[in-house]
Image (cartoon, rainbow, N blue to C red; front, side, top):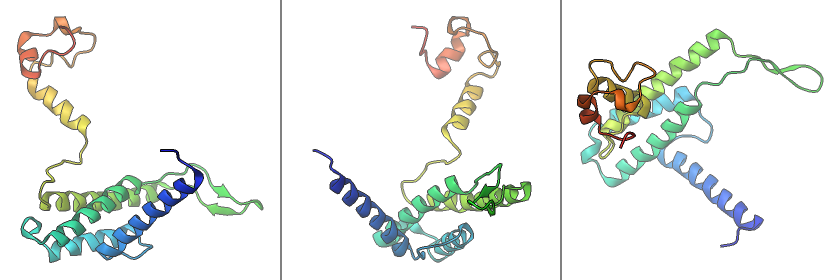
Amino acid sequence: MKLTKKKIRKLIRESIKNINESQKLVGLPHQYSNEELYQHAFNFLRQNPDLRNASPDVQEKGEMLLRILHNAVQKAVTYRDRNLYDDDYNVIEPYTTDEDTAHMRDVQGKLKMVRNALASALPGHRHDYSGRSSYFSDMLRRADPTGEKQRSGLRPDQISDAYHDAIGRRYDD
């Protein structure tokens, strides 16, 4: 399929329309703050405490709200180390202070909390949003109570067989 500018514009319009429709379907206005999103998601969970036995429409709204929450968590903390100026050297946006960053992190924590609660309430969402790296490091610590692998500089052939049996041999075959 050949992509032309016309087709790309049409795809972009359709994706923006889908985003706006999902916001309308879950009951969010076109412009909303992270605090409003948190309150809306919290009220949604309060009104629908048992999403596993809810109707498919309510579950679909929960899925859409979960996607919106996930994106909001990723964009909740922004940091500027300099002021942004216009052409006349007037400050458009000031730099981010430590208090601003702390407030954004608090709001991000609220969004994460309601996102995890919604994900655990929805059927089929047993995903932990803490990240793969923390899960992987926890698995390695459980598999290696002696701490052999955590010491730097050891090659795979220098690690005990018990450790390899616990996590599987991957690199030294």
